[in-house]
Amino acid sequence: MSTVCVSDDDLVLRARRGDPAAFGELVDRHRGAVYRAALAALGSPADAEDAAQDAFLLAYRRLHSFRGEASFKTWLLTITWHQSINRRRSLTSVLRRLVVPKTEDEAEAAMAGLASSAPSPEQAAARDQLRRGIREAIRALSPKLRDALLLAQAGDYSYEEIGAVLHVPVGTIKWRVSEARRVIRKRLRERGHGDV
Image 1 (cartoon, one colour):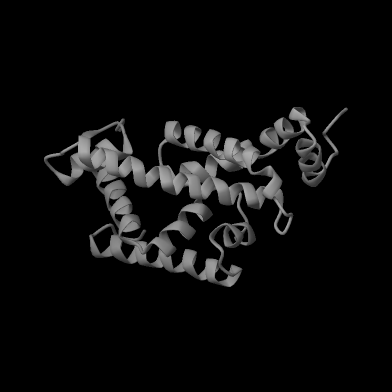
Image 2 (cartoon, one colour):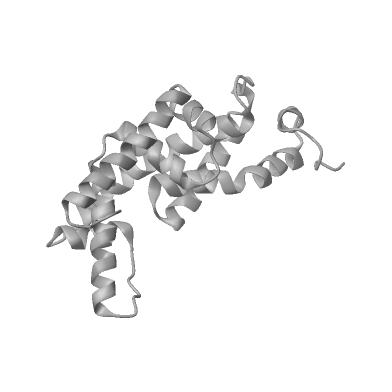
């Protein structure tokens, strides 16, 4: 039976009844959104893939607890976000124990896994300095501002979905994202990055 015109709610019912293809369709429909949420929280494509797989597995195990109060996608993104945040905490803890960098820049490079490929040394230095400034400004945000911003910047999530994931009203999410951007721009200007 085709699942192209079947709603998420119908697929959830079919999956609960033991239809593995129904849950597979849910995975196919939401794979991109789940990956982008995990990537926003973790910053690493490999870690985001692992977190996304963990989130789908956990969602499958908890499918019986889905009550339909929010959309399936929102419920799944909530699971993904929490899995990713827990993974970020454990990865940060492991990295701090294993990697003892000599400088903060080396710590950034180790944690972010960033590679530089600029056409000139001056451009590379300016770009790296700006990236470092942005990462530092994001890291300096309160967790509430940082999480709202990362989810908003991740891709195709509505403010309503972000609000449901973080359990706060939509107006609060809009304010947090706006405030996070304002604070980051201010910090970058203070560090000499001009009009950002």
